[in-house]
Image (cartoon, rainbow over all chains, first blue to last red; front, top):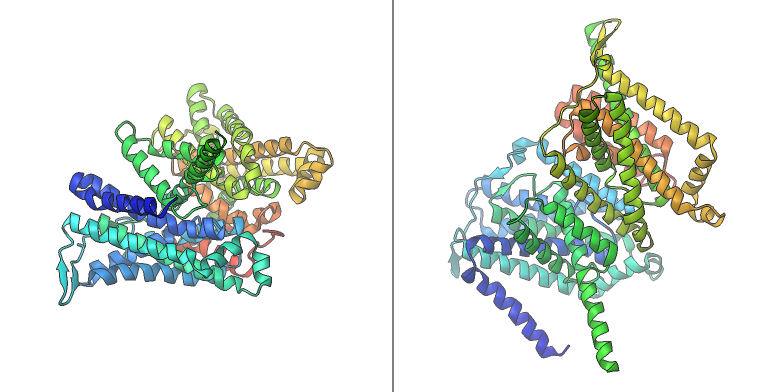
Length: 324
Length: 290
C-alpha cells in the first residue's frame, strides 16, 4: 500500500472521530466513546494474548482497579484535578500488576489463565466485601468530572459531554499510539520472541521473567487507564460491568473476533461487537446469545479473526489479478 | 452433646456436603483436563443446565427420582454433542482456542438458560422421604444434606470401580498420562475423549441436579459452583483425582467454618488459600505437570 493511501485512511478515521459528536446524538456519542475505551482495554489484553501468547482471564482486575482508584479519589478528595485522576487509575492498575507479577511470570498456558482468573475473582470478592472503601454492591458514585485545568493556559468544563468526548478520545488515541510504538521497539520484538520460542530467548541471554513482568505491568497500567476513563464516562463504579468475570471475557472476545495477530485486531473486534450490540438491542435483549454465537463461529472457522480473514481474502484477490 | 458442640458438628457436615458436591464437579473437570488438556470453563454451566433439565423433568413427570436420573443424562448428551461438533474441530488449533471455545459455550449456555427458563430462581421440591429432619443424638439435621453426602459417596465408589477395575478405566488412566502413546497403540482416542467428556459432564450434572433443591435453580448457579470447582482443580493439581478429592473436602470445611467464624471474609479465604498454594507450588498440591 502506498504512503498516500495510508495517510488518507488515517485522515478519514480522524475526521470521523472529530465529526461524530456533531452529527450523532449524545447517546451515540457516548456509545462511540465506550467503543474507544474498550478498544484500548482490548488492546492491553492483546498485549498479553497476541504478543506474549498468554491468556489473561482476569483482566477486569486491572480495569476495575483503575476505575475504582479514579472514582474513590474523585469522591473522597475535593477538588481532585482531572489529569491526576486518570493517572492514578493507570498507576493503580500498574501497581496491581507489579504485586502479582512475581507469581504470574512463573507460569504460562492454562495455568496462567487460571491464576489470573483466580486473582480476578479475589479482587471482585474483596471489592464486594470491603464496603467501607468500595461501597460494596452499590459501588462508588456521585462524583462529577473535574474541569481540565492547566494553570495559566487553559480551563475547560468537562461536565459538557462533547468536551469530555474530545478529551477522552484524545487520551485513548495517545495511549494507543504509545502502545503501538511500544510494540515496535526492540523490547516489543523481544516479547514476540518469548511467545514463539521462550527457551531460545533464554539461551540468548535475555531475562525472561523480567521481560514478561514489564509487559504485564504495561498491560495492567493501560488497562487501568481504560478503566479510569470508563469511570469518568459512567460516573458510577460498581462491581457489575467493571470487575465481574464478564468484563474479563469481553475484551478477549473483542481481541479474538478482530484477530489476535495484529495490533488493530482488537479495535476492529471492539467496533464489531459495539456495532452489533447497538443493532441487536432494537430487536432482542439476547445480546449475549449473538456475541457468544459469533465468538464460537470465529474460533471454529476464522482463528486469525476478521483482520486475518481480510488479509487472506486480499492476498487471494491480488493473486487472481496477477494471473489474469 | 452441648449446644456449641452441636454447632461445630453441624458445620462440619455442612462442609462435607458442600465438599462432596465440589468434588463431583471437580472430578469431571480434572479428568477432562488430564486427558485432553482442555480446561473446560463451561463445565459448571453444564451442571447448571442439568439442574434446569431436572427442574423441567420434575415438572413433567412429577417424580423426583426420575428427574434426578434424566437431568444429568440429558446434560451429558449435550456435552457429548458439544465435544463432537465444537471442540473436536478446534483440537488441532491448540489449547488456547479450545479454552476460548469453552468460554463461548459458557456464554451461550447462560443465554439459552435465560431464554427458556427466565432469570428468576426456580424452586425444586424434594419428596417427603428426603425433606425431613434427622435427630442424631441431640443434633437435628436435614435429611437432604445427608442424602447428598451418601449419593456422592455412592457415585464416587462407582467411578473408582470403573476407573481402577475395568478395561475402559485402564485406557482412561493411560490416556491421562500419555494420550499420544495410547493413540499409537491403536485405541480410538477421539472416541474415548468424547466418552470421558460426556461422563465428566454427567458427574457435574449430578452435582448440579442435587444442588438444585439446596441452592434453588438460577442463572448465577454456574458462577457460584464453577469458581469453587476451579479452585479445587487448580489447588489439587491439574489432572489429579486424589488431589481434587482432598482439596474439595478441605475447601468445603474451610467454607463452612469460615462462614461461622469470619462471615465477611469467607469467600476471600478460599482464594487466599489458592494464591498461597500456587505461590509455593505452581502446579498445585498433587499435580505433576502444568
